[in-house]
Image (tube, rainbow, N blue to C red; front, side, top):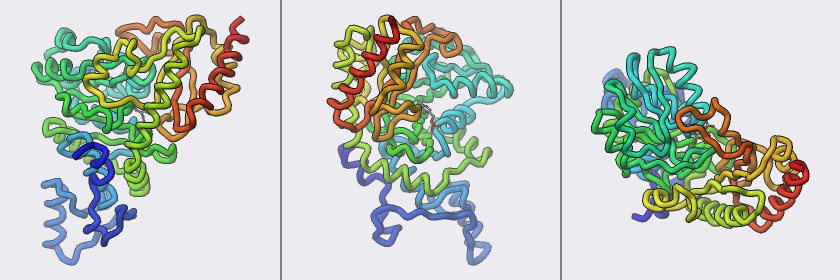
Length: 395
Ligand SMILES: *Cc1c(COP(=O)(O)O)cnc(C)c1O
């Protein structure tokens, strides 16, 4: 089946739900059994055999299974774990792959709170993190140590948009016995499937495009057979569970992911091309643009682009960026992109705390734009006025 068909039907189980199209929200903590044998059987099936079988609220209900099965099918995964935010999906996946004495490699383009977790929390548990050039490709072999157990990628990075050579990184990392994790939020499970490119774990801040309506926080961790045992152990030990209401909202959002993303792609392309034509703009960071350095890899490994892009100005200042942002009519200032509406935020990856392995040398601050589902012509009019304010504040 094509992915547009899969996204509609994946994980559905109308029979399990008395014919109801969407799996209802099962609010559950206690699950009761009619006798001891039934309880022991449920425990065995839920915990040991990892079957989708009711045992205890924290271990999931049919509301969760629908989302888990759908994401697994789209990502091509053995199983999917659900967490209460995208960040917790990143951190728990990492915790599932490393222990005291291990070394972790993380892309320098990583989402900043993921970097914060490694530097200010994981280090206290005896795990050393080193950052690597996102464009390293097969060269990852040269920065691996004998105790490197995991390589964490994010492609493209959500501020600098470098596309990583995931198959090359996976091959080199596997040759030295490390697992490869990917934060796949920008592409969503529809436009890139890291497990099919040889990686082991694909993470979504489903808060973004999967939920798609800016009204729920959800993380997903899709694993292959190699990634499964560690993540299962971390999730179970920490006691992580996703509220059933949020699981429901994520599944509901997922059903329209394909049509939404096509429009995000089309609108973002139109806005990106317009921005590129502007005299203030040095670069538009959007891998779907043929002159983007990541275009060839994007074309090879992705089947579409989404709505998030970066803008680098030739000359810039904090005052100019503020003047632009503060007057926008259709682009509220906000961080959690992936919903239906456009957003804008300042972006400053040149700060030394944001990059350590391959410093970002482009003029900063720039802006990061999420191109929503509005008519792109209206967005361009708003951006044009924004650039007029930018220019006025710059001189
Ligand atoms: C937003 C985001 C996250 C974190 O997701 P939350 O649901 O906000 O915790 C992780 N990775 C990337 C790339 C993101 O954009």
